[in-house]
Length: 86
Image 1: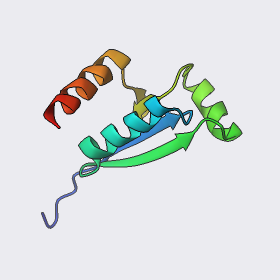
Image 2 (image 1 turned 60 degrees about the horizontal axis):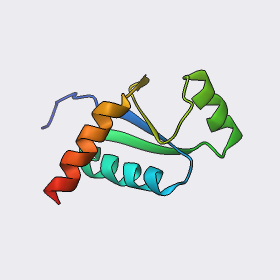
Image 3 (image 1 turned 180 degrees about the horizontal axis):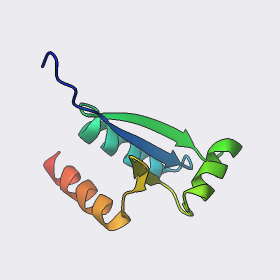
């Protein structure tokens, strides 16, 4: 749409590099790549780990949309629905 100023959501995936993190990254990219700016962040990087702590994140993977943590139960439901559709 020309002239449209639809803002894209900023999605950050905080990853520890485990298989569950990989599945989460895949899911978020499949579902949100058309309307979200997705960044994958490794908590193995000290500056990312510090940011994760500042956001109150203690377990990973963690998905943050526009600065707000996505509740795990919501994310788990989306993941299950996506898996059933494949």
